[in-house]
Image (tube, rainbow, N blue to C red; front, side, top):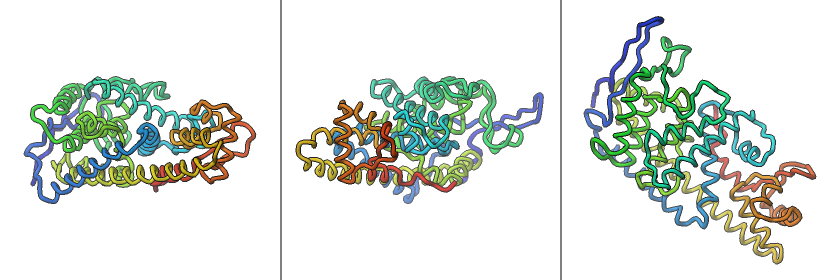
Length: 388
């Protein structure tokens, strides 16, 4: 199906170099999406994968343990797309008050991403609707104490922005003028709330992501908020109980295709190609999350069984093992605080866990020793080292 431009260009010729800013048409697409059998099959497969992912939460003895690591992995990947150098190990080190290998400001940016996602889900669980107000709150958390003082945390932009290039005149893409942003966002919020008509939550997530990135409502952080919006919206619509779906790895692996498809939606109305890409991203991301969750469950169950065979040291060692599932790279002091154990008890437990091959010391210090839950971190790190 051939469509025309999905919006209109506003020509700006006042005061300087002329440029064209793009104002998207309100959702849903017009003419409607052409649901060919292959495209429908892709979405059916994605929905099945999401169902399996949601079912994993019922298998978890403590969802919070696994969720904590998954959220941090997504924060690192999403921030990598924006150019940060932090690794998952760096994030855990900073959270343990240790010095990371990456620049500290990069790791702090990732920490704020974690806080923003946790804030969004906490608000949804408390009954707060997915709305423009919540997006502003998330943005405020994302840029709290940021070095970039021009970002205006929690506020929609009041000036022109552009993507690529050094100015609007040579940019790859120029989002709507600031004056058009409120109307664009109002229409987007209506669509999020199933107006003028309801849509399947997964279809809605795909359409909303493009529209949000096209509007580019903030001075900075649009990519990160736009990616956070996907699991938030699926949770708000009852598809997922926990934020276990994250697509940043797929978007990073297929970065060029991702940007090309966003542009083709705007200029050619090719929603079908975007929807196919998005459905594959969701299906593969959900399947990878299910596989990782099952492997981590199997690993922790096996290690817990080994620890249980220790005899008298077993109870304290099991508490440290549990703390490592929440913080798989940590100092002995941090593990003691999480497990509510004395330093002497923690050190004895770590000796047993090292002997069993469950943990490994990353430092050679007498104090401030850092330990890693070796196999656990290895599974979490899969897919993290990606080509630039």
